[in-house]
Length: 173
Image (tube, rainbow, N blue to C red; front, side, top):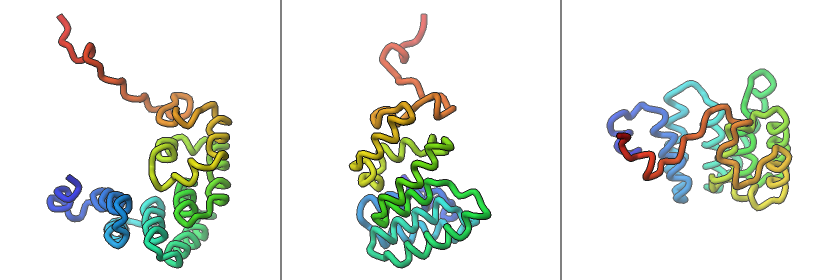
């Protein structure tokens, strides 16, 4: 479907980002890099897209390019609000688990982690963090269990979708 989206709207940034993540998850790092770079070239620089590109570089063995993006973002972070998840993503992809946890702990303190919880729980990129007992401790410190990371009304103001059951689909009489 994402390829169809590219055919229909070749200049849509979101399509390239989605294909970049899909290619990365399939081990097609050069394709992933190409899609993330296309997304960056089409729109104003977005730190999240740049961190996705850095993660693809790191996964594809192009560590120097990933580190260059990290250093550039670190240089801009003093004057701009760059989400902690950007740095968590890059540090995790580079294997810098300690640095990733430093950013996670800071984002847990200021509660900016709330929209990132689902990714931490399910995204394959963050498997090294899930294997570390510090993530379970971090979740417990927020009153969560790793299994509850998907939705928590205290942390995520959006209401979670209600599960659909056979009873809820029946027409009312």
